[in-house]
Length: 199
Image 1 (tube, rainbow, N blue to C red):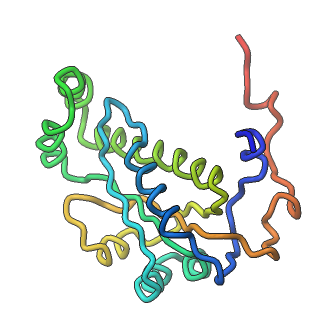
Image 2 (cartoon, rainbow, N blue to C red):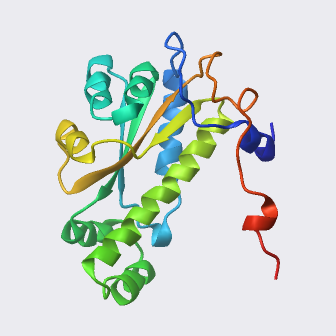
């Protein structure tokens, strides 16, 4: 299937088939895809947590508002976190960034207010989200990106230091009865003329 067909058929899954699990082999592929994701100056300010343990998944589900059932039904939950300690980030980037990238950060990013720097870091994690959702679609894996979670409670469950939860993605395989499928409920999108300009 080409990418346009994937875009037409990918959707935010509302109901999962609980009898189907993403294979260990595909999880290994997704791990490498997350590792290879693009970011500005190769900053990589992220951490990804893949949850398959059902008891732990239930705990995250309770902190997921209307997404509770999706987390419980899904095969895995993938949690995207961003570094929240700028000192730690700036120290660690010396280990993997080249001199040009470090100079760019120091001259163009570090000079801005802390809130702006953190927003820039968060944007990198959102890039990885789009990359990940597309990869899942290409692999025939369904997904549900979720900002509707209690991030502080996720942080407590993760026990992560210097990072903060941004969002999570439930992954698995759709229930054939899921009414959100494009062949049942067509996608609602603005016309191209409203969102795309040629100059």
